[in-house]
Image 1 (cartoon, rainbow, N blue to C red):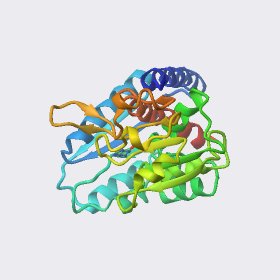
Image 2 (cartoon, protein in one colour):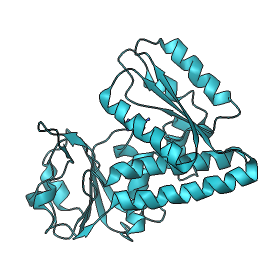
Image 3 (tube, rainbow, N blue to C red):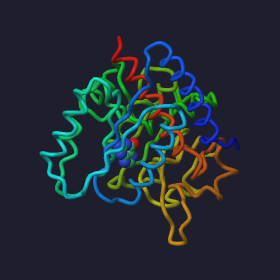
Image 4 (tube, rainbow, N blue to C red):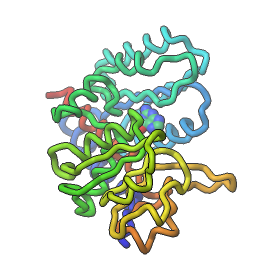
Length: 286
Ligand code: GUN
C-alpha cells in the first residue's frame, strides 16, 4: 500500500509558498497579509488557528488573529468583516467556523470580499466552483485534490464516494472530484447520515473520501480491494488519541493507497490556506 504522506507534501507546498512570498516582496514591496477571526472558546478552533498562525509566520506572511469574545454581537462582527474586506493592506480573510450559538455564519461569510475569501466559502466562490469558473477553493477538499495530484492518483473515469455533505468539505469535495478538470472527472456519489446501506455504496468506490467525523466508520468489509482512501475525519478517542473515519490498521492490505490520521489531510488544509492566500494576493493585483 502507498502511504499518502500529507505531512511531506504539505511541507513541500509551504516551501513553494515561501519562495513565492520572497518573489512577491521583491516585486510589490510587501508580503501577503492574512486576517484570521476567531470568535469564542471552541477548543478545536483554538488549536487550528494556532497552527494557521504558525504556518503564516513560517512562510513569511503578515498575519493578525482577531480573538473575539463569544458574546460579540452579530452587528459588531459584521462591522469588523466589512472593514477588513475594504482594507487595502489585507489580502486574505478567514472566519474560523463554527461560530458560537446566536451568530449567523452565512451572513458574515457573505460580507467577505470574494477576492479575499481564502476559504472559498463566499456564495460567489461556491457558485463559481459549481460552474467551473476560476475561484478560491475550500482548503480541505482542494488539499485532497493536491494530494491525489502529487501521487498521480487520477480519479478520472473512476467511481468516487464522498461521505459527508458539509459546506466546508463534503459538497465542495464532490464538486472538485466531478469537475471537468485535472484530478476531477470522477463519477461521484455523496453519502450522508440518511444514506441507507452505506456499506453497499462504499463497496462500489475506487476512491473513498470520508468526512463525517465518526471514528472507524469505514471498515474492512466495506472497501473494494485496491481502493484509494483519503480520510478527512479527525476524531479524538476517549484515550486522547486522534483517529480518522477509517479503520486504518485493518485496511493497509486492502487499500492501494491511504492517508494516515494525523499526518494526512490535516497538514494539507493549512498548506492550501497558505497557497490560497498567495493566490488572493495576486488576484487583487491583476
Ligand atoms: N472549521 C473547520 N474547518 C474549517 C476551515 O477549513 N475553515 C474555517 N474557516 N473554519 C473551519
